[in-house]
Length: 373
Image (cartoon, rainbow, N blue to C red; front, side, top):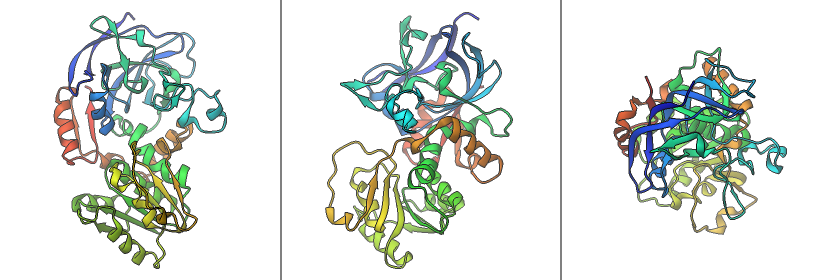
């Protein structure tokens, strides 16, 4: 196989994007070419439009192996795979500590030294206008074909999971589910609160249900999203007031539902900086607040909210171990315990990417997915 010319979404770095041809070169010995079948969309993809440089967009995806490098033994042409953006090296300090999600060598978001890791970028492997171009999170899934390290793939043969649903596992589903199961370690009978019921929040709800939480309290300002939250496992819902800026009134309602103490666990999934401290108001003494959405700016905390013995944690990617966690999620889907098909509100061809972004920003979709025919 010679190099492949295919269509891809290119973020131009100035807030805009284009759909143009790229060239995907032959795989290096440890690389794989994947024919993308579906790519999930999230707000990070929209944010990537303004990262100040051209990139091949997309960091959620699933597809079929098209060609493997001569040192790749775990995959072969025709394998169905899920792509994983947080590729562990398995050798650095964090990987050996079991923290594959924050790999020091390969993570595209974990700072090291004076900048951010390029990880497995292999810029010369993908060309746009005859010049090397970076792939978003080293995988660039909003493209008909992409070139990745074999370590960025998880096999999914032998499942009834469609590519559209498989494509959303590798970010929002994993982040939400993992924050409950891997990070908070919610147990049977625990009480939980979920602030924000978008794609990530719905998967926190599912993780809480699968873990056997007795109370799963969903909070949102959107009544329609709260109805959807019930479908995914919420036992109680609270329609928040837009004027309740720090959700302190909503926190009082949570306490009414939890014997006056507050919940055992609260998960912030809104990405709204002013709500960064809100989960602390929802949990009991010695409870745990989990900042799931990844707020990355200065916010103010009332230290009284930490009283007493409360824990506040800010995990990345649900502490994902892709080769362990992705197969678990696929099995949960196959057993009917994890809803994925129901999470996809609408699918789009790549040519309608702008419409998909518009629907996402308007809050119309729990999850939108780009489908490649």
